[in-house]
Image 1: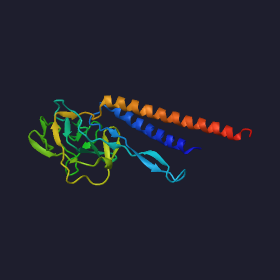
Image 2 (image 1 turned 90 degrees about the horizontal axis):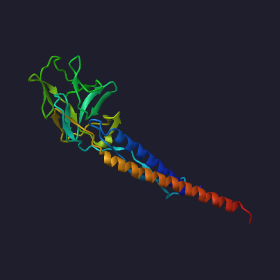
Image 3 (image 1 turned 135 degrees about the horizontal axis):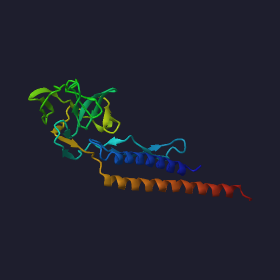
Image 4 (image 1 turned 180 degrees about the vertical axis):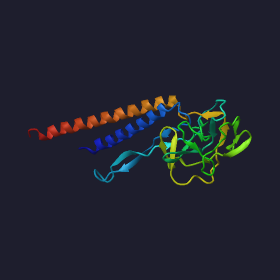
Length: 238
């Protein structure tokens, strides 16, 4: 079989993965704190067909950590981050990072996110507030006050995007240690950050990827047809 059909197949598989990534971005265009995936491709060599035969391969999705739009909500426990970095929350599977700052106080007085994961302070402990707190305020540096009394500082960390693995729509597992010299984000109280993915770009991406995929499929069909004709010609009467 021609090596060309293998190259086209590799390209089609890569475009299929890119389409999946774009679909996830579109599905989360309204998800609070969502960071878009960006797909890139690389060339790989295949000694199986030819020592210099190149195929396209897809790299692991990278995250676009650029700022999403911040909207004011008026809710004291809605927190957005301005700049690169994350809140830290404790889940059943361990510590995770998020940009979704739609927090609340649970029945035990713990600051939690929408799924009940505990929001952590800079020492790695849950932030405890009085259950009857009448006024909660969070400074731009992340210090949390309940009725004027400081109850802790939010744990804010920054990581390179290639050290992150998405867990669900807006939680991340981090590999290694956070960046030490990174400038931490500012906390914007009574606000939430929207997705940083543009729906219009998503439509354009879907069209582009789909057309490329279709072209590669047609290329494979063309190779197959050419080989079929060649096989008949070679096997026919002399």
